[in-house]
Amino acid sequence: MPTAVLGPARPAFERKILAPGDAARWASALPRPLVFTNGVFDLLHRGHVTYLARARALGAALVVALNGDASARRLGKGPGRPVNALEDRMALVAALQSVDAVTWFDEDTPAQLIAACRPEVLVKGGDWPVARIVGAQEVLARGGSAHSIPFEYQRSSTALLRRVTAAAKAPARGKARRAKR
Figure 1 (cartoon, helix red, strand yellow):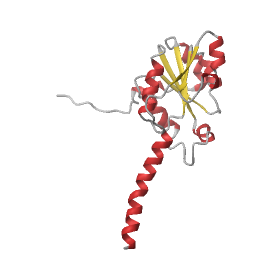
Figure 2 (cartoon, rainbow, N blue to C red):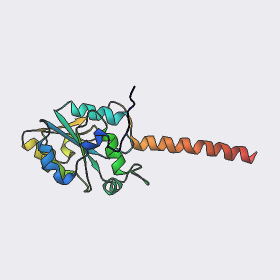
Figure 3 (cartoon, rainbow, N blue to C red):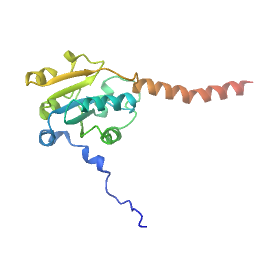
Figure 4 (tube, rainbow, N blue to C red):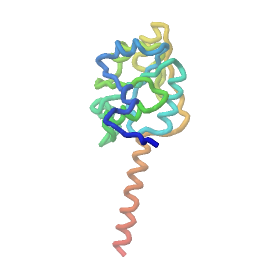
């Protein structure tokens, strides 16, 4: 039986990672209605993947724009954030079946990308009222829709990072107590 030989070719999902400067071109080739969402997606968890699946169900294709590293740091999520570099975060999101394209933005908001992609549907998580979603007014004015998708699983990257940090410190505290005896 022949065995598969893994060569230097990139995994297929990496073809979903697209440069923001070409957004108008590649977005115009995606099936419509086009759904657009954005976020940091630092430590991918069940809440993220469920949210992205729900977003994708609102249209024929889903574009996910990730905050670049500097943009993510400006959000004030805490020291050392994002934990994962942009390239790694994009690869994980691109590997999801519900996602058709992944790009990034270095600005504070994805307003320029939204204008270039011209989505029919704009989506954010349940902590974002529609009135505060960047680009919602423009999408609604074109006859599109904007949605705040309720959280189905109470998960957050920040809470996950706190749990991991606490778990890592727990054995060290135990060792310190045993050493004092």
